[in-house]
Length: 222
Ligand code: CTP
Ligand code: CA
Image 1: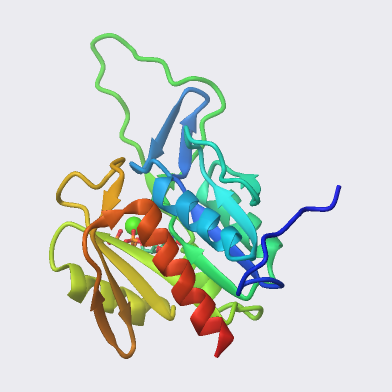
Image 2: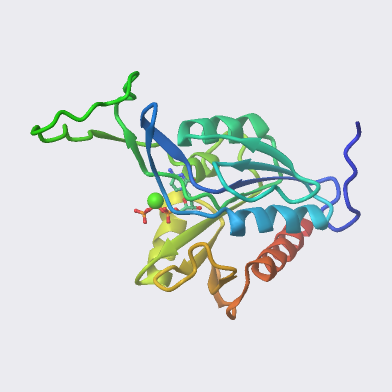
């Protein structure tokens, strides 16, 4: 079955989008995760597809359906997500909107950890997960445009500028998550690039996605 792509400025382009949380198992019944509905990342994937792009949406576990016209790759852990993103290359652009767990339990216990009455539970030792955005930004097959997100609760712009430099990506979409953004339908973001900061008004996540997709189309056209 041939996929039908919309006509638009991103026709012939391939964009990889990460979305949702990752789940990092501790044992067969428990995991560590970030809070993420996947709404913003999924909306971006849909908006890119609506402009004609072939979109690979690499998503952690979410409760929402993939937008029409995108190829979904469902993953669980950060390691899985990185492998799926690398397998999807080459791409013209990448948008890392996933809330990747920074840490995972260092050991994945095979059997369920049992509680022993009267005994304190064993501490969980954590290991650092790979950084998918940083890896992509320094990849031999680096997409021409790499976009990251920065969810911050304070010093939003300064932290986003720091992330842009540290990770080596081209743009950072910064958002203040100190309010009710997580899981909500609206988002107030700032587009941080090497050439400056653009403040966008509070918008529905679908509108943030549409604007970002249009900006990506403009950038790739240059
Ligand atoms: N990211 C990623 N892989 C990770 C961690 C983060 O790809 N292991 C990406 C996110 O998808 C996002 C960007 O990096 O696009 C910033 O994520 P964020 O959690 O804000 O930044 P961190 O570098 O993890 O810093 P911290 O959580 O300490 O603020
Ligand atoms: Ca993080």
